[in-house]
Length: 131
Length: 181
Image (cartoon, rainbow over the protein chains, first blue to last red):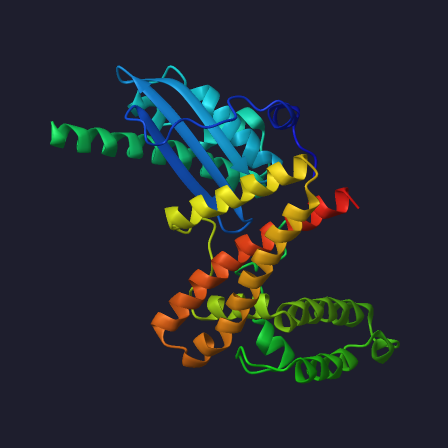
């Protein structure tokens, strides 16, 4: 199966690979997996004044899964939490020109963004409750 | 490429295709005997004088029979086929335990680092650990399917999801070792 140029670009030069401190207050971590292929994807956000100031990912999976998460981190930087959480996997499919068998990779990236936003919100709620 | 563990929902029941009972504890010899028997019925030699449509149909059935055999003869795929029958097919979007995912992520990182640094000993060690896990899961499947109650089947499903990650991990170990042979 041929990968699109954009997938190959993100796969060969992934953006924002790495980790943020998962215990830091302003960091949200999303960890998701696709049992069908044994892939695992971690996506993290740093939030300042309600806006995503930084995003990092680590994905162990196929080229499409890596490209989807790489693109996702690029998309969400500068977004508010609600904007990021409303990103649809179809936007990733279109941007990367993913074939039908790889659509689940984009779903995984969408889930990872939502999980990271949820994690951040939970942390904030816990902190507010303490204050 | 589709992972080979994927069983399309529309595929005919592999146990029925082979005329075997849908159980986990089937022995290799009887599976193979059944497959040979059914294969003979569909052998192209038997259809030499037959109309083209009939010959083509026999070929399609022979291929489907072979697919069924590939599922039933492998314990992991046989177990997954039993889950499909029980309405517990492993989907693309299973909720996975975050602690488990974290563990897999860390193990994958460790393997990736060992691979890049060509530390073959470390790769072999990680591989051995995962092989133990593979065997533990595989040995646990027979009693779970023998019990067959909903709790046991749900347990089997969790183990089979883990097994997919374990097998994927072992593939990566194999690839890493091939590089440095």
